[in-house]
Amino acid sequence: MDQKVRYEIEFPINSSPQLLYQYISTPSGLAEWFADDVNSRGEFFTFIWDDTEEKARLASKKSGEKVKFRWVDEKNKDTDYFFELHILEDELTKDVSLLVIDFAEKNEVSESSQLWENQISDLKHLIGSV
Image (cartoon, rainbow, N blue to C red; front, side, top):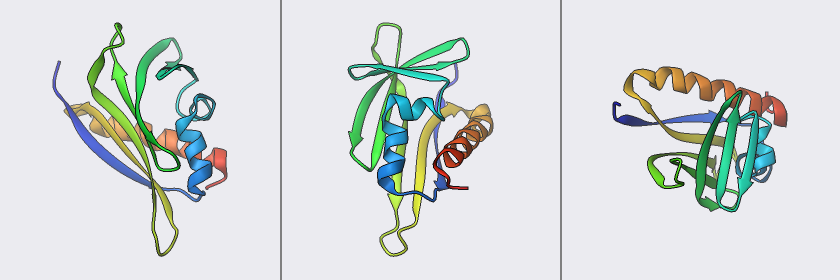
C-alpha cells in the first residue's frame, strides 16, 4: 500500500464556534453529517457508512476549538493516520472556518477532498450556514 499524504482544506462556515464544536465532537453531532451513524465507547468512536465500519480513538480535543481522531486497527492500536477538525475564528472579523486535516493516497487526494466538500456542505445545511 502506498504511503498516504497529509492534506488540509479550509471551509468558511457561518456559525458560532460553540455550535460548530457540538457537531464535530459528539457522536450525535457527527452522525448528522459525517457518517451514517457514530457510536462511542470511552475514547473510541465507531464511524459507520453503509456496510463499512471504521474505528478511531479520540486522540485529543480542546473544547470549542478542535478534535483529533486517530484511526485504529482491529486490535485498537493506533495507526499512523488521523483526521483533525479545527475551528478557526478571525479575531478582527469574527469569521469562522473549519480546517480539515486528513490523509489520503497521493492519487486519491482530489477524490478525498471532494468527499470532505460534500460532507461539509451537509454540515452547513444542518446548521443553516448556506
